[in-house]
Length: 354
Image 1 (tube, rainbow, N blue to C red):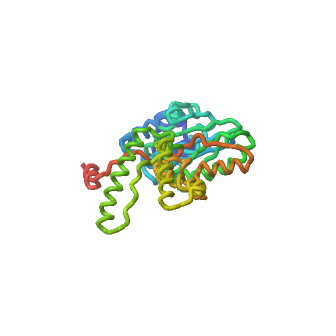
Image 2 (cartoon, rainbow, N blue to C red):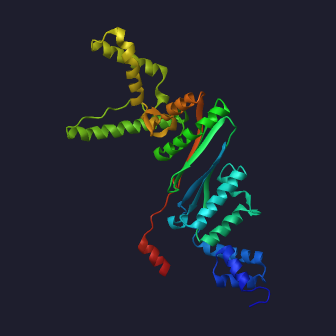
Image 3 (cartoon, helix red, strand yellow):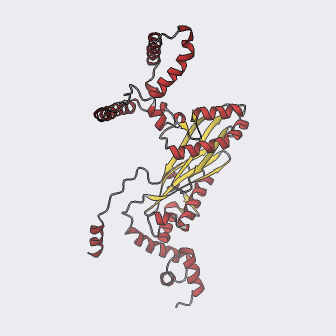
C-alpha cells in the first residue's frame, strides 16, 4: 500500500462514495492519495458502469414538495426501478434537489439541470449520484410558486410518493390568504386523487373540445346499440360536453325548450321562475361532462360533492371575510407520459448470455 494513504482513508472514501473497498483502494492509488481526485476517479469509473444502463428508460422514481409560507416547489426525479426509488440514498438526493430548487428559486427542471450545486455543475452532481446509486436518474419535471403575501400557497404529497400537487390562490388580502392555506391543502389532496388535467374549461382548445364531443357521441351511440339489443335503457347522447360550447344563444335556446316543456305539462307560468333555475343548472351539468372530468375548478369536491372546487373555495373565502381565486396548480404523477417498451424476457436473457 502506498505510504500517502492508509486504511482510514479507504474507509473515508468508501463512506463518501459508497464504492467497494477495493475500488476505493485503487482510486487512492491512481490519485496518489488525493481524496478529491480519488472521488473524481470513482465518478469516472461509475459513469462507465452506469453507461451500460443509460439506454434503459427511467420511468420509476418519486415526487416531492416543499412548502414554506407563500413559496412552494414540486419535483419529479425518475429512476429505472421502484426498488431504487425506495432507497434511502435516492430519497436523500430527492430531498437535496428539492431544497436546492427551493432555496435558489429554480423555476423548472431545465433550470435545475443547468444549475450549480455544492460547488459543481448539476450534471456532475447527478453523475456522482448515478455512480453511487447504480441507476440512471433523471430530474424530469419541476415547478415553482413564489408568490406575494396576498396569495395562499400549499401542497400535498401522497403517502406513496408517486403523486404530488402544489397550488396557489390569489386573495383580496394577506389575512384571507392566511385563512385559506388549510383549505388549499384539501384542494391539493383532491387534485392528487381526481387527476385534473387543467384549471378551467377556458384553457381548452376549441378543436380539442370538438374532437372530444364527436368521439363521445360515437362511443355512446355504439354503447346504445348494445344496450338496445339487450333491452336495456339507452343513455342520453349529449349535444355538448363543455361550458366553452354553451354560448348565450345555446342557453337561451335551452331555456325556450324548457319553458315549452313546462307549458306542455300544464305547469302554471307563475311558478316557472322557481322551476327553471334548477332545470337550466341540470342542462349545464349534463352538457359539461368534459369540464367535470378534467378541470379542477369544475370537478365535484371530493370532501363535499354538493359543491364544485370553485364553489368550495369561494365559500371558504367568504367565511374568512374575503375573496379568493385559484390561479395555478401543478400535479405530477411519477412516470406519466413515459412510454416503456415491453421487454421480451427470453430475448433479454439470450442477449446477456451472448
